Amino acid sequence: MGGELEEAANKLTTDTVKGFGLSAVKSEESTFQFYPFIYSAGGASYKELETPEAIKSFEFIDGLLEEGYMSQDVLTATQDDLTRMFVEGDLAMMVNGPWMIDRISESADFEYGITYIPKDQEFASVTGGDNVSITKDGNVDAAWEFMKWLLAPEQNEKFAMDTGYYPTRTDVLHEAEYWKNEELVKEFIPIMEVAEARGPSANWPKVSEAIQLAIQETLTDTKTAEQALTDAAAKIKELEE
Image (cartoon, rainbow, N blue to C red):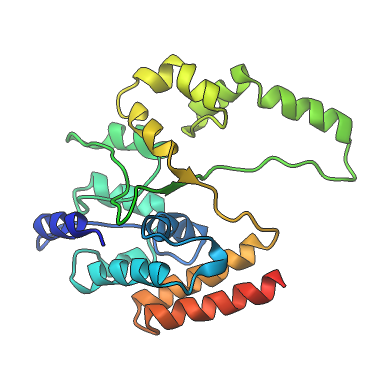
């Protein structure tokens, strides 16, 4: 898995620079950043974490850490921390999102590019952002009207541009000039085509906690990847029953 990534990370790693980084902090950020590697290896849903494909993806990331291509700092690094390390020249490659483009461009005095997350079997990514919901005890009719207004093309486009997110509507994504023509920004469009949602699950916060723990157990050598994911799968199965 990821032979080219490993080779590039090796070449880019020096005494002062790590070749690769992703967030493995115990929060949703690590689940968000690890999931593309699970999908890319041929892994399926969060209900099948003990599969050989998922285990393989965790072993690969752990190998990058063991080889010294990633810093132990990834265990506490948020996406903000990765961006800071990148612009300061301490990190050569990272997994991150389009909401960091403006910050990087404002701070970095070097050219940089954006591409797919390296693949094993196929390119993969996951969607981030936020959810909009209506509570059953609220003013449902008015809330629904607001939701329809917010997600109409004009508002969807403006909200996405102002936040650094990508439109939740494919028509806006493909028709708006900003995403078609803006340098760097447009590089995320093909990545969006292979992005999958995490879950979905009504128990997602607890499901994600189990995955986060497996990530940290694997990278700290508290457990093997196989044992960490087997235990996570057992916890998730209990949650979903």
